[in-house]
Image (cartoon, rainbow, N blue to C red):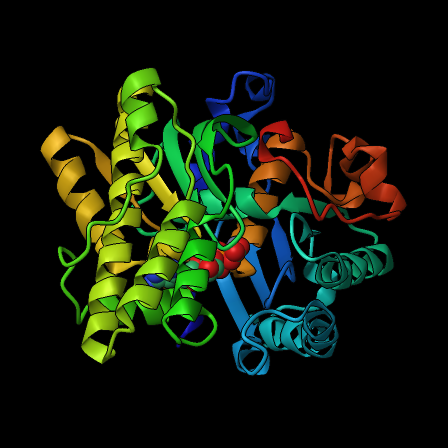
Length: 398
Ligand code: KG4
Ligand code: ZN
């Protein structure tokens, strides 16, 4: 693939989002300085994928590479944190070199490094965090800790048809299920979240009950495609509360238990398992679609962004697209390859944050009329780092 083909979305085209962000005084600076040309290396190591990407603020995504540990964790039926960390250590440097080579970029050309600082597995996060800070220290450029979910929710901006702020984001990953109101980069309001299992976790655990391997989500979705969704009446958790009180929280652990009881009672054969998978998927999708539409109605917004691994689910996309079209809403998804964990969304989030936060200043002192690195917060220049295995996204303001 040529480099031109790999460019997904030039950041300059989404720069106006930043200008709409009220607490950024970008209007004080000349137009030419508002969005500095910068090259960001993104590093993602929060769970079981090592993702590396190079994002240029004007040229878009230059290259990205991903190593997934699925095969390694498969025999244990889930992610083994210690093995995950060790594998990130093995992969991260070769992948960085690969991406730099593919993009034809030298380390000296990097302006900043963005890395996933949390949430995630502590040991896994430490690998990306320490390599990012060591590299940034050696190159004398800023290292920027990114919230993994912020990466996910901004990932549709990498698509050819990106949303405009403000929008509602449905974050559905293995660890999180949240509805957020996104006013701008760094302006997130939590509308509802899961009180127990995340949607992806429910897919994974239910897949395990049906004897499917890890990771269960895609396998369960595939099996569901062969079954009849109307076969079993499974609960739609917390929809009743929403209708009564407007509550936008989710709960999926009861649904998983309902499947457990069903499996014990029916001892299903292959076709029976497909029907259970389809019924389960329909129940989860029903809840996600109904609550997402209600969130749009309540906020008065018309755009929904779906992010996180479960966003790759085809039935969810089909149902959301249908319901949204009927109600006059538009739904945006990341490209399939950027639905699950990847380095591109981290590099993009870093570029957006630095582009907004540096207020037009080039990141290198010698290139900047405004002081470059001197404008970066002290924490980003000391290279002292910590990881945040638990980190609330709604605390993330610019
Ligand atoms: O966002 P992600 O890659 O990692 C986390 O940050 O958690 O999401 C992974 C989750 C897993 O639970 C996986 O089973 C689920 O997303 N997933 C799916 C599908 N593809 C991935 N769930 C349902 N249908 C899919 N097609
Ligand atoms: Zn994720």
